[in-house]
Image (cartoon, rainbow, N blue to C red; front, side, top):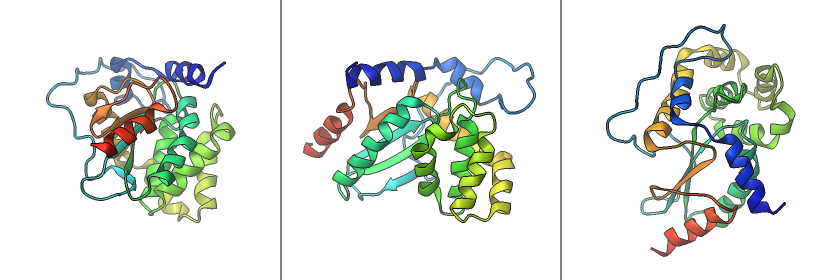
Length: 221
């Protein structure tokens, strides 16, 4: 199987219709199941692609092309793209701004706990470190029954204050922060993960190389 075919299949596996994504914002999968009301339609102008809460991995300054990735930490395609994104960050250091936003899919039971772990780490200034661990060790925790315990182990490994970490994971405000990104993604038309925007334009990925091609085009403008 070619690399382009592999990524296409993986992206399809991660695909999700908007109505299901909207339902994610009113259902907490790790709590007892309850009947959920129908999600409201997303209306009004699209959300900002990057706002004051967005996690910036590299800031190349005003006027630089901006790459925004909506991701799900348990998504296999996101895991495949992660080393590619890291290579691009190195290649275009100082030239391109890279940002990430959460878009956990309901089909992945550990996606929300993973996002909560990343956000709890962010509150202690360790977002990128947790972000790296979640992707580098995706095979270790994806599909496990108690991924949250694995993530707490990562927090301990990173030297985080575990009492503060536990409080952040349990705080509804942290879930609200994850939902903020997911809502923004829905508003912007995100339907699968990973979804990349380069200078405000959503990419239609057909191959791993498409992201760099879009970055090069943005730099030439």
